[in-house]
Image (cartoon, rainbow, N blue to C red; front, side):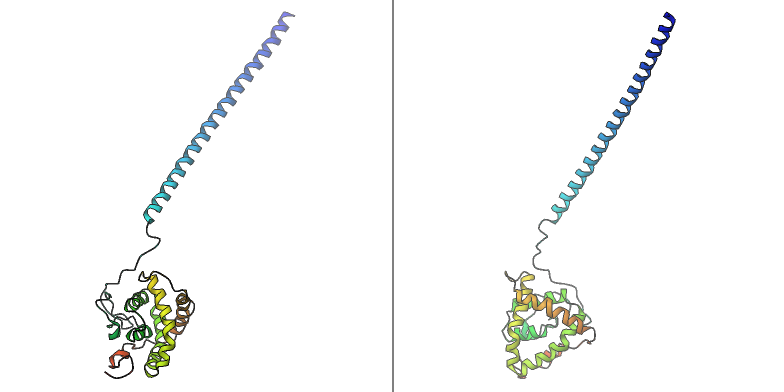
Length: 228
């Protein structure tokens, strides 16, 4: 009987030992899992910190660039395919009563109105710079197709010049604002430029050929159409 009891208790003790071993193994696995989770959390925190640092650097690098000031004039020399002189344009170099001095960017109606005194010289200069930087040659070809004949009508019939004065001024004033010359935008000018002028002239330019717009001022005519 004692031998049976001893075997029974030995069997129970053996089971307890196995259970303890299993428990120890489970605890070890749980501890390893906790360490892995902690390492993952640390890695995520490091990655987040790096992302935040990169974002801060990007913001710091862009401070002051969201609202650009007046665009710097192009100073590269030469003549483009439209016959426009490419080079520095400033109020000391060009006056509107000489047809843009060869650098008027082909804005023939605005130039004619500046010659007539209907558009301020600084506004006209801003229009030139903007046009050279933002209107493609195709757009300008489409513009010259109707703009050059219209200038001739302006010279022959003053009523055509009067008709063009207000919309052209709106157009040029909004551009002058975009170029940092004026302090307020002209939203009517923005609509004229972006809704009508740019898409219409671009479409016409698909079929129009380049025209010698500078001939308007080589013929020696004054703004009133009288030969000088």
